[in-house]
Length: 542
Picture 1 (tube, helix red, strand yellow):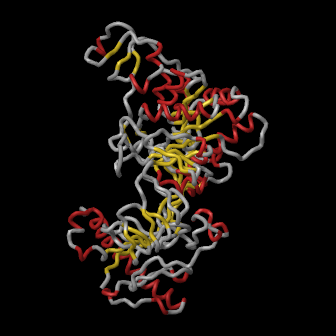
Picture 2 (cartoon, rainbow, N blue to C red; picture 1 turned 120 degrees about the vertical axis):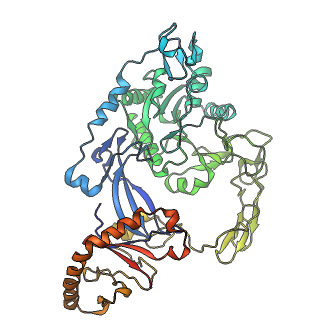
Picture 3 (cartoon, one colour; picture 1 turned 90 degrees about the horizontal axis):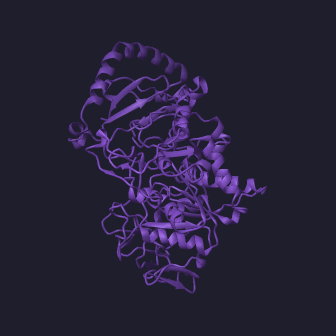
């Protein structure tokens, strides 16, 4: 990829995350129809920025964080110029769901599929179970399917029986008749086995099609709202119409904890719009929603949707950390975010109580603070009030004057904060909604803190200082004509030494990081500079 603007990339082991750096997803108008496709549906447009400067825009898979699992990748410029030639694979993945699925009363746990009844030489050494009843077929995630464990592609953690019953009771208590289970196979199985209400499972795991029909299961990507089969989308619309009114529908979603919040919010808004449009209602309101996610993502979720967090701790059966615990920091951090009025969601005693002042159920150790006028605890422990911060903080934290906030006793002071906009610094909006970016204006920001290396903003200042040890004159303070003369003389020298410089750069990149960073004096010496004409120069600080 060609870098247009001059960018300084510091290859330092100690500087893994720079302030104002990260990746954001951009949803332009009509993105679902115009984006290139991978086998998992429309690809998402990502914006990568470093030190508050936009460095690249590219399309990548929405379902996999690991490029090895889905190598579909193209920059925005390349897509506009050449298009995308891999979209033919989409039809292959769509045809997979439309094939008839073989089903019998014998299941092979080793191959994770049904096999013909009777003995088979191929599965002789495998773990096989036969005489499966109809009731057993309604519990695939409990009795048959093993959980996927790749955190970068599809990691599955199943709800515990206690948390499943709680969610079911919330649905029943609010007179819900139709439940959309997105990534919630345990709740879907519980409803199908014990209740008369309707439910449909939307999940990206295609193994569930062996157990459920198209009316009960649709292969669905929650990060780009893509149905892998057109008949599945029709089945989903038929399910929505059978509810007779949007108020009878609830969305229960349990996304991967590493998934992007913006993508899930976009899918929830689309499902709500689709439901209201089927009943000829033009509404931007969100359907009744129960979203399971860690409590430390509360701010991200509230910036997108008007949801409040319940104090109920969600436990998982096969997660080594998010299991049931009685007290302390080892309790599950997963909570429920919902648009249901909190006082109507009754949390079970004796671990929860009702706060008369806040008018909601809270954890037993979540004591009410008169100064904050709230029950502030997020993790279930009793918070203490800090008079300097004017908020309640976690137990064990002390106020740090350098950081200007309460921190753990052993911490690295960092007065910088990542809240708000990385471009202009305002706390009222995020970078993607910054007025400067919308008006195509760039804030005056320095790209480097090194006094021996600076980069100008205009085209005349694209060159940087030359290595001071080489003895060449620095063109920083000369006129434009003088700069052009110096450039012409220096380009001839650079052409002669380009092969040598490139070889040295390749050798430098091929070194093992361990051997290079074993000497602390090397940490801040190597700087790689990418300039407009794609010339690569290596500099060494004196």
